[in-house]
Each structure stands twice: as C-alpha cells, then as structure tokens.
Image (cartoon, rainbow, N blue to C red; front, side, top):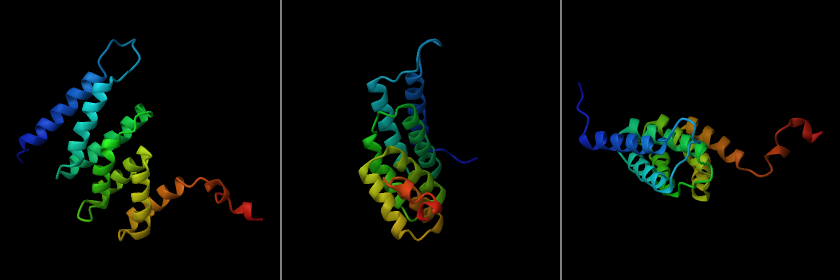
Amino acid sequence: MKNIPSRTVALLFLCAVATTAAFSGSAGDEMRFKGATVAAIEQNLAIGLSTDNAGIRASASQVVRDLKVLLPDQDFSLLVIPLMGIVKDQSADIRVRMIGALALHDLHSAKGDFAIQQLARFENNQRLKHLCTWLAYERLPHKEVYASPTSYR
C-alpha cells in the first residue's frame, strides 16, 4: 500500500473541516456560507491546486467549479493564478489540465480568459486546444451571429 504524505492528509482534513463548517446548521435553514469560511476554503483550495499530486489538483479544480455554482457572487480571485499554473503546465496530466481550464473558465476572470485564449492559439495538445477554443468562443459577445449557418442567407 502506498504511503500518503502527512501534508496531503492534513490538507484533505482541513478541506473537510471547512466544508463541514460551511454546511453546518439545521435542516430547515437555507444553506449559507460565512465570509471567514469562504476565505478558509479558498486558501485551502489554493494549497490543493499548488500540490504535486495530480489527483488533489484535479479534485480541487472540480471543487472550485462546484463552489462557483453555489456562490456565483464570489470571485475566488486567489485561485486564478494556481489554476493558470495547472493549465499551462506541459508536464501535467492532460485530464488535470482540462478540468483546470474548465474551472478557470467558470471563474470569469480577465486573466483566466486571456490564458484560455492563448492556449486555444498555441497549445500543442489537440484535445486541450479544442476545449480552450470552445471556451474562448463561449466568451465572445457576438457568438449568436455565428451560431446558425442560416444567418448567412
């Protein structure tokens, strides 16, 4: 059995505690996050996105996407740079890079959108390039003009 580093275990424990604290309350209460809890979750996710473990990086990227759905008003600006690092890391697993690109896209940041546009132009991996091309296309303000071939008649 493979030994898991204590830092990884501690990080997962902190994420679990922060998530449990965020969802605590009675069943009838509306689910709410407190500002300090969101900040703690964001800091723990930044640590998770910066680890060398591909599984933790992928999981943290997916948690970013899930949190953005739950908290659309939060900008999670602390996570943009670590996600950009994942997406630009040529030696990283392509699946981790793809979920990182999706998470970066979900954050709606100018820096993240620019990074996705650059990957769409210059990436060597065709799967990631294709994904980033579509993500960049989705950000175009006039995309409905090009959506239908019948619009050219």
